[in-house]
Image 1 (cartoon, rainbow, N blue to C red):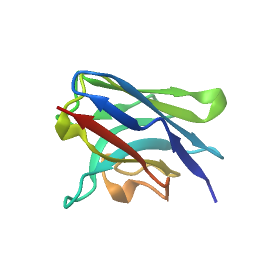
Image 2: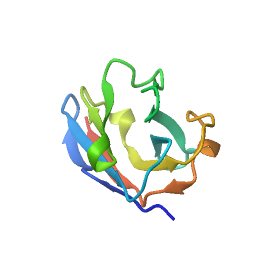
Image 3: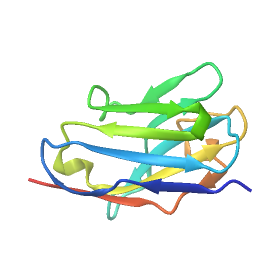
Length: 121
């Protein structure tokens, strides 16, 4: 069992920045961020694989969001810059234990409780 804990959400104005953190209690193959806005399905945001350092972003956040990792702490970060109202959602961190499609929900085994990000216009 791997515990996944996110932190760092909040309420900001459009154009501002936020950094989300996600700590996993054990070793994982990859960690990713997804988000879910009211009335919408959960969607992929960004992911990073520990082995090989592969990084992926959704087109909607490319150039604005940066995912990074701290291997020693089993922690990943999501730096979100130039936030837009359409980025408003609950952001979920997920941990995957095996090589799968880490841009898909099915690529993950454990999920955090989510952290709210609200961007006002």
